[in-house]
Length: 177
Ligand code: YK8
Image (cartoon, rainbow, N blue to C red; front, side, top):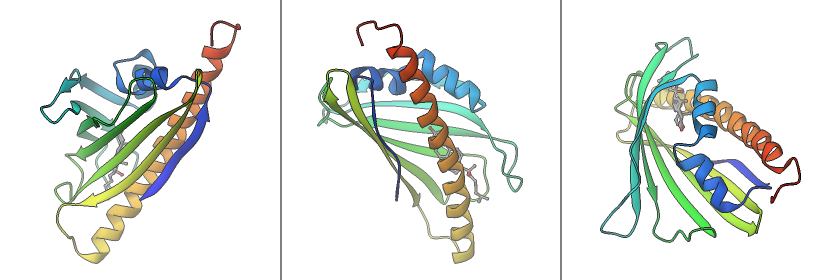
């Protein structure tokens, strides 16, 4: 896998979780900018195991000329029970793209880790992996992997820069941040 984001933000751990994992204005805006449409968010629900789960459905616009222009996607998120409100959040997000070639062979796993640094600071880490449900032919596999990495790199670079803008907005004006 790859570590796409590893950065300390001037945003509390609680606020970071709210920005990324609730139906926040930030996420709505970011999805708009990424041309992610028809988004539906299920609320977080607790599981017998002590973890929380929710799933999202949306349509993504794809710029890759080898693929159609859109794909529907399902993202299943698990907030691990080891998470501690305000301190430490670990979210496993598995993304299935339903309308791309070889969609039944692979999915993407994004692990988001938010760690409290101090009252108003947290570290965000995002660790990403392309997972295979069945083994495709070698050439196809390298094709899927290469195309996935480039899309993911672009997405997380954009997410990091939007979070930096949000950080600047939240911290301006000398409020209680
Ligand atoms: C989530 C991983 C692969 C997929 C795409 C597939 C190409 C197919 C390869 C062929 C288009 C928001 C990606 C990048 C679409 C976007 C997905 C996003 C960024 C030629 C065989 C959507 C995070 C996420 C996870 C997986 C990404 C897809 O929050 O290349």
